[in-house]
Image (tube, rainbow, N blue to C red):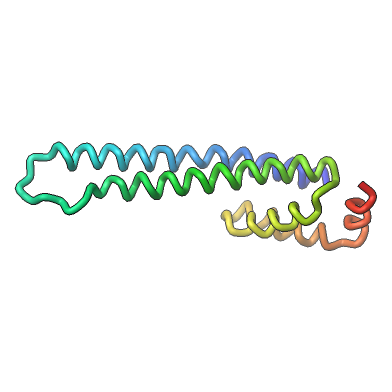
Length: 124
């Protein structure tokens, strides 16, 4: 289980680092919005299309940070051998987050399904 703890720690840190992408995405939206507002064009835009980038960037940032923090919590709970259901659910959620998440989630589900691992969590 220590290997899974380390892998979830790395996955959580990588997910939090990936959230920087969404910050940049939102900044690009603000830049495009400012350029569109200050442009000397005869055609009036019906809305500031830069806000679409900002909204998508904000939603992505919140999701990425949330999944990153919850993944770090999984690492903590694996070390303490508690919250079996939380670890199981987060393994399923991590299967939705790319190649590393799929591999980590599938192997965690396989490992958590073993009877001896269930006994370890019941003892703690």
